[in-house]
Image 1: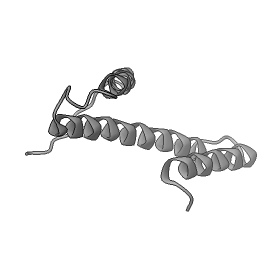
Image 2: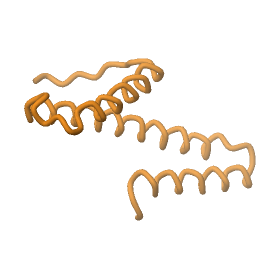
Image 3: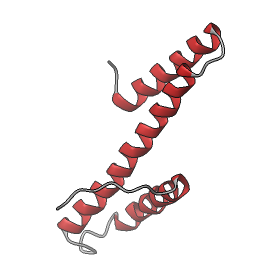
Length: 92
């Protein structure tokens, strides 16, 4: 497959995550509803969107450090970034 990147609006990405998360509840308890390949594709897509959402969150938190107006704001932004990173990536 030729991998190309596209841009989608953030609201559409959030809405897609919401819809996919609610399908997860629909699939539960219905193993015969879809085959394993479809379930695997579904999970791959959902987790790819989670990864993208998390990357955007970290990028926004990092930008707050860069554009802080003073040292106190920069410190607070750095602590927020490290907290977000710890939640997303696990303890480091």
